[in-house]
Image (cartoon, rainbow, N blue to C red; front, top):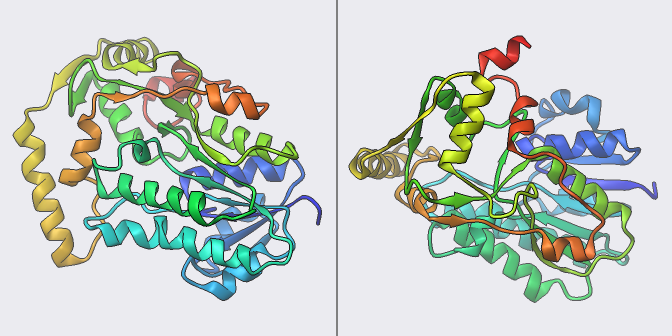
Length: 315
């Protein structure tokens, strides 16, 4: 199994697209899954399913044995406390490193992080992603590794940005922060292509690399509204949301989450991320070490994403 790759987070938005592309390109895909029932949805794009989780060291040992590489897509994006994020985003990396360190010939490792890790003071999520990166920087030893920091990711299967695009398709763009904020974006299949390029290239310098869709300077809300308006054939108006309309439900959400034990998306910390004015990144460092080019910018990516604009779904 010289082309065997192990995947964590295979049932997630990005993980599924990574599994699908690698399987199509002839890789034997071994996936770590929390329950056997999750394997059913992945049957077309995985070859081997292992039951286990990131805190199951025996399962992680089985996962990494005999593979060429490990692609770590698993992570927590919702939560109301540092611990909620650290269990997956920090402890998960630590446990994976322990499993790799116990292997006589450890495979190389690619971890998906987030551009949010660039600003760890903003949120529990951002801080946990940065701490996961630091574990690799400090404890990987001679292991070959790469961290990819994508910005906002969208595409088929997305559950986070798709609701926003659905609202925009109705003619309004609710803005949580500054109207002149700029941000990079990336279509999910371009991330999968970067993973494939890393696997196909024998030696890549270890490090943390950002990546985006190739649009210099990213986007602002006016540009996004114009693209949505063109695709949906209707005017899209920007609508600034008063600060209090989000602050209060975010605080309530966190309090209720601690009481009821669920993992919220909208919290005061998440609002700080959303209101940050600069989420622009570049591909320069990555493209110096990896033979990869993004192929899909926002207009084309939204055309390829079903379920948000009825006009496109009828095409």
